[in-house]
Length: 339
Image (cartoon, rainbow, N blue to C red; front, side, top):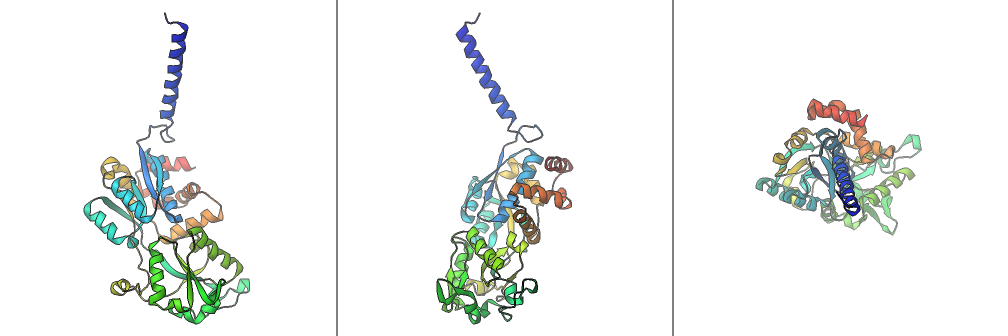
């Protein structure tokens, strides 16, 4: 017969085992099934990749029974993480920004391109459309009706006067560390814009967005770098200033053309097709567009929604789009989870 101390010992052990069993049971998806493991997604410093991570992550968790996680990092670091297995999925690789590294990693078999998320994106120097066309509803007259091209900017520098250096205009640049920042700083010289404009680097994507939205809300002129898709492009009327049509030779010589439209691909680490073929099959069918992404990001901003809430809205709103990506039973599990 067990003594009282032995009884206490076995009671403690039993409680610990029960807690462990409950914890393991709680690691499954909402259907009560045990999790198949964790799929880690690369997360960059821009809204659209967070949105696509949330959409794919919701399907991965609720439909396939995997845990979903993210690993933040820059474009280059995320690509390295994908190649060495720290990251399993990269939902929005701006291939033109890392083209040499990307092509080499694909050629070497370190990463696998499974789909093109979308390829109708744009980036460059934008102005609020009212700067060119005015806005009758807001009582705003056209400020620069002849402004069409990036090459027209020197004629209108005073309109965009730098508050810290009124003798020159201000162009809001890209976020430091982004490839677009390098491009624009070179363009400032090759296009002669530095003679009449200062290139101002915002410290973050939030700072850049704040400067643009604040100018729009006040009805004031603003010129600077932006891109699509974004929630701002989905919510406000912006005009991309024209540039020379893309030409590979001219682009290689001082970036003397418009930004090329990029293939925003979905890549996975090389072992994932064997480790999680069901997820890779799903991702191979995943495709959206710049307009759809901007619309979803605008919804997120207007409704102060989280990425996960916006993903649920997207999957409800565009059921006909995503249900063919997955088997019927997966689609039903996801739809049940977001009701």
